[in-house]
Length: 174
Length: 183
Image 1: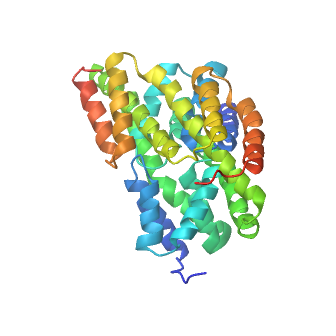
Image 2: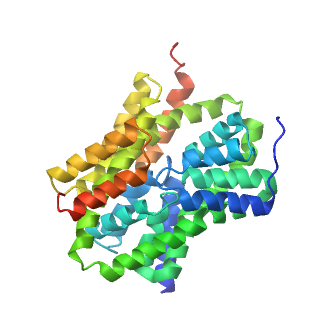
């Protein structure tokens, strides 16, 4: 049990420091580690957990606690959440203090400008990879595309899109 | 520096707790609304700056932002309170949902709901990525970096760490040397 908790903490602690552009940027890497490297679950199980995490309120990091829950119930969930938030939070606590002093330096501007395209590539690449697993047929691709288009062009509350997806699934359209 | 309302430790916790419990999908607009408009803890410019910092640092952006805001007003204990306020309610709700899932995963109806939920949830991430991409600097190096990262992750399925070890220094070097094109 404690070996599993340690393994969970190490996996999510690593992901925490790689999550440039937010938690969604490391979802594919999480899938690679959890499914291929450790064999904790199948890709389909991971996708189901991802869908559940997206339906809960709050930041997208919850996927980590769901994987932890699956592996080692409540302690696993708590350790995984601390793992994925802890290292990056400690880093941002200290950097936020330093930033006040160094924000006008040229290097800081270069970092800000350079990271922008990377985080976009990470988020869209991750979405593409997930779509390949989550979208099992043409109707799922269509649903995904419509949801993407609406989320991009309008400020409709995301819960409506998730609800529409759930209903479409329940009716057997997907 | 403008004058601010300085939150107490208790207000930090309850403020971020409120965001966590209602923030479905996009928490960020809610955070802005609370911090700047409703509570007046930060000015718009300060918000943008702290958010930019949260975005370039690794980790979930909103979590980073909560830590930076809590830390600014009450040091480490403020950071910890804002952080746990933000995550407490979503964590409990996610645990509730996943235990329901575990209980009823055999039901065909639940499998069908998830089959529809997953593509819609993936679409939301595409939507957010496209929103960010629309605001990206229109220079060839920026677009090339975004496309290269997309291909490495999405099409080639390479592990993230080596990608970052190559792309981060490359991106910062390019941004350092290439002047912003006149707009």
